[in-house]
Amino acid sequence: MLRKEYDHIILLAHGSPDPLWKQPFESLYQQVAQAYGENNVSLAYMELTAPSLEDVIDILGKEVRHIAVLPLFLAVGRHLRQDVPAQIALLQSDDLQIELLPPIGDDVLVKNAMQTVIANHLGKV
Image (cartoon, rainbow, N blue to C red; front, side):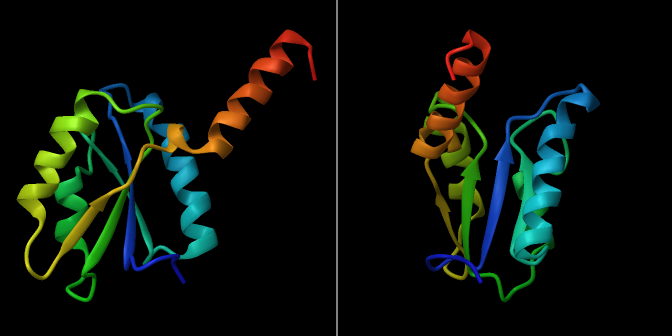
C-alpha cells in the first residue's frame, strides 16, 4: 500500500548515454520494487536513457489515475523548474493526475545521510 493518495510512484533519474551510470538507479528501483511491489513503482529517465517518463506512463494500466513523480535529483534546477513540469503537463488528463514531488535531495533523511558520508570521509564519526 502506498502512502497518501498515489496509485503509483515513478522514480525519475536524469539519464546518461553511459550504461554504467544507470546501475545505481536500477539497483535502487529493484530494492524498492521488491519491498513495495512492481505494480506500485517504476523507474524512468528524463533524457538520454530509456524508459522515458512518457514510456512508463504509456505502459501503466488504466486503473492508475494518480501518479507521483519522485525526482532522484539532489536539488531543483532548470529540469525540475521547467522541463519536467512541461512533460507532466503534456501527459496529464482528466483521467490521469500527475504530481511532481520535491527532489529526493530536499529530504532531511537524505541530507543527514550525506552529512554522515562526509563525516566518515573526514574521520569525524
